[in-house]
Image (cartoon, rainbow, N blue to C red; front, side, top):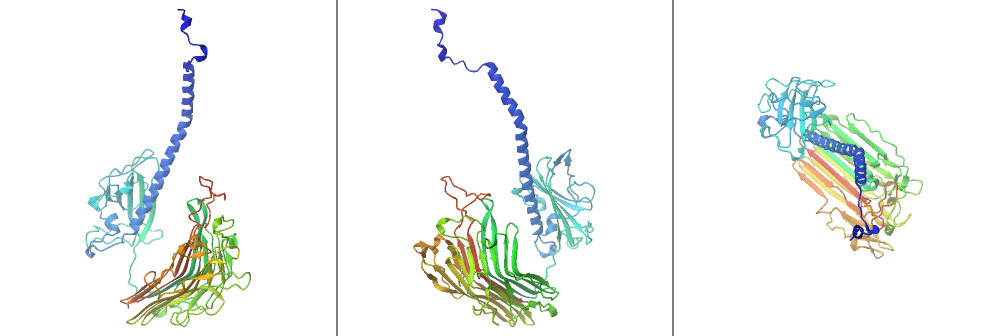
Length: 598
């Protein structure tokens, strides 16, 4: 047979790659790897450095918080209590070993847990540069001999804490401890000063070129004394908040508005003191915007009248009433505290204090509007548009009765909070009140009928200690209605008081023209006898707290959008609901305390 007879036809030959082709391919791959590998290694190192730095900062902050939460000093004969120095400045025993600190350009963590008093020059650059201090080295396993527990959060890290006594100079200078100092020995446990400097350093538990995370703070002795007499009053008539689109899909931009805010605190401890803060309306956003009307804050002494911000109307941002805007504020005339004769106080039953959001005399009559911002992408099935909340109907006038009672009579105001806090030779008394005109929640369409109408005709909390007589009372009158599709119906009886104990009906059981109210309202609740009202009267003190007469939270109202405003779509191409876009409303928060321990 001829040799040619065994050859395959040319069209069916599979010769593979030649040696030259393989060598060239390998060369190309190697060249690409050589070019890209340094960048990959650099990226991995950068991520490791960033992760280590972030964890280090968190551990340092946690350690500082641990230090601040310890008592400054407790006498050894007071019992088994642990103070700051029992853990972080125990005695004058020198450390068992000197830390390596650095090896060339690499930071070297201490090899083992230890404690010790450092008075010489054997210290690392991240420790105090001068003066004696006490060093504590913490690792994941703890240090049982010195009462330092194991801490699994330290896995991969070492924490070094340096504690140094400081004198009262400005700036403070290091101060040496007393001779024979020992926290466990009565008479030798007194700290050298009333303040200390604390340096916390977190290092990776391996030699590294990454600089350790170091933070510093000062802690001073807090001299605790007993409050002898005190009266406090706190009111927030209305508070609403929502979330606008933020820097990411899971992080929103919180916007809040509050009205009828009053905080009064009159106390006698080592001396008389009165604290006051109030606002007819105040609003803020997470992006830094802040505004309001009729706002003030002061601390007395001296016994001088507060300085108030403008009463004029305004808006939170350039978005105007598409986000938050308000009419003018108002207040009663006399807000001057008194701290003389050891009887601090501000306001009284005959001269009660009130701060308010008033009925506008011009424009469309809106005292307050809150929306979801310009161009908000509302869920179409809800039929909503800005504003989400408004006050335009009804009003009332200034006036708190001597017994801490309020009504919705009169005119000129839409929201108000007030009261008094005063001490007397025989006791202490406080009153807290809140009122609102009609709050329209979720108007449907421009100027349309709101789905829910809320009116707080009055809420009050009264606390008093008069000799052996204790008084702690709470009262409120809340009106609540919803749109049934053609007119307004009462929610339950329509009126809720502090004497009642009936919960609000589930929104899913109420119909808006055949659609459940739960389509818009996620949840709501009202304060009642068994829940939401606290009244305590015992010993020589009384306390009343009604955190919220009404709480209401809507369902999410908007679709998610990207940072450029483009709607976010799911896999099916449908717009994604933004779970953060709820509206939260709290109406009527009142509380007070009164105590006399003289």
